[in-house]
Amino acid sequence: MNNTAENNNLSTFPAVTQQAMETLNTARSAWLEARRRQKAAADNIATIRQRRAEIEATTNALNDEWRTLFRESQGVISKEMKKLRTEIALGRETLEDFDELLAAQESENALLPQETAELAGKVYPRARGTCGYSRKTNLGRFYAIAW
Image 1 (cartoon, rainbow, N blue to C red):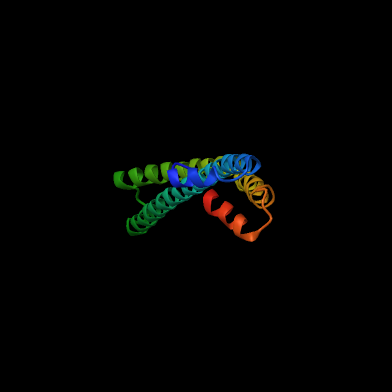
Image 2: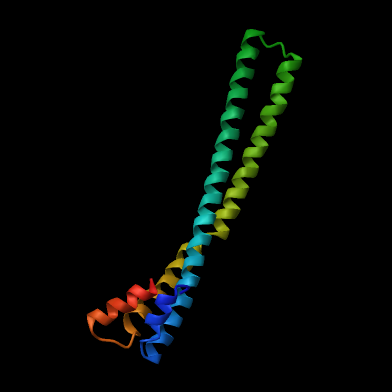
């Protein structure tokens, strides 16, 4: 509530409503922060998956190239083919590392949606039930100031 007009409007409400607004704003801030953390975690996982897909595509392309060279050379392995084989092995190891990283991230972030939902549950019932007004117009004013 940085807006002076909102602060002036809030001061016209009874103390119980003002206290409810403070509680609501605190709960809302915690909920918004939880939503931000959940989105950041989802974005991070999406980025990791994208990088993994890029490594997988590169590794598969190198493997296809190695197989083509192997067939063309009738099984004679050149220095280029040895180098490709090393890059393929490193790519496969990297894919395993990405899989472990994804599993760890998903495990760490598994409860974020529930935490966000719990915080949302703290925001919305309070907003409906603690404003101290029973008339719809005053409740509408309460919501307009809160949001």
